[in-house]
Image (cartoon, rainbow, N blue to C red):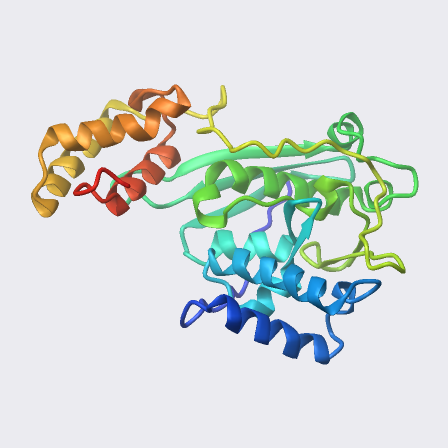
Length: 295
């Protein structure tokens, strides 16, 4: 049985939020260096700056510095694309996510991920897997693609990406790997987390597989093999709610209405959430302005 633990140096969080004017100035200075040529090929400077600002803004929402964001994210057809090194850093920088490769060969990979947010019980776990057959069904596999040449690495990347998307999207935010969007990449055979997008002469990503991506707002996740909250989870939430009411000087009815407001659009009840989803709900309630009803 294969076993592998990943350690990655996370990016340092930004010291302060940048204004749009500051982002534009930084983008222009970086363009002068010639380092980000993919933004300037067959593109006017104004458009290149706008594209870079979009990426910087997306990174700022995740507390990422501009240079790291531009090196590890890209907007493709209105969808945010993240390099594997970005997903890794975002998932692991809190120190709450650990993972092991349980099975791995040239045709498939199985990864066990653990999330340690809750100090009172065992970690939340999720077993994520991906195979060459999955890639073929998704239309990603081509005879001359990385899937054919480096199946072990590609399956590991995809299994990890799917796992963290389910277990800790509140930590990493939305975003697809280049390979999930059908974009051709140059993959480092000695470092599975190191890849680069291939751009054509017009500065556009080279597409090797046409895939359809659902860009709708994600629902609260619910999978058959992902356990919902337990009675202990709900009791702990109830206790936490009482403390929040005392801290904020609000009534239980106000808290209940806020909970219903968050869950009603999703068509879900509190006891139907998974433990990570309950954590996200608690974070939303903590940031909720009860004096204005959240407006």
